[in-house]
Length: 161
Image 1 (cartoon, rainbow, N blue to C red):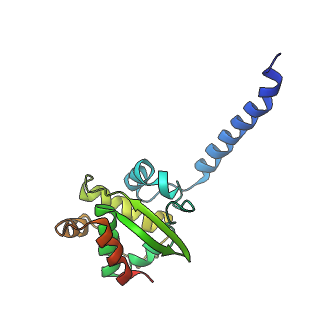
Image 2: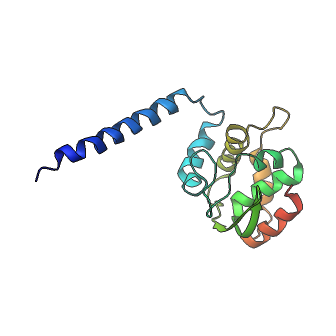
Image 3: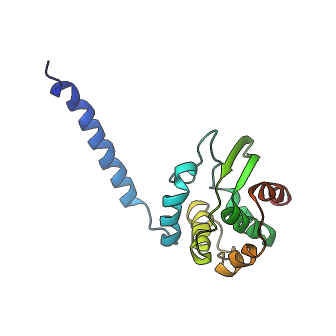
């Protein structure tokens, strides 16, 4: 039995899908925070999706609330806490429940975490120009107050819209 004729349509479909994805990526604007984009793709996209749209029943989307949080000092601190110490337990985003365990990324330096948050806030979340970029010093300030992921979830209640 010759399987080549049966495999040809699947192979062509796979090649076409790859070409379309590459063409779409080529049309996308370059991120304002390329280092943050690279860190996001290497660490966050596996759960939150490559465009930050979230993965149902796994991890929430990041395309709206981080940009809102970044507009307020308390929210900015929460974003820093989240990437530094992770978050676990039930949260609600856009009326959907997520009960997950986000790992901590405290092993990454402050500048890398700030760039990653800026990629999320500005490139994925399209925060307005009135929102100032998150600085490495803000990450360092939160790094001085070690908490666990459950405490981050509790803190979220004070900043969640």
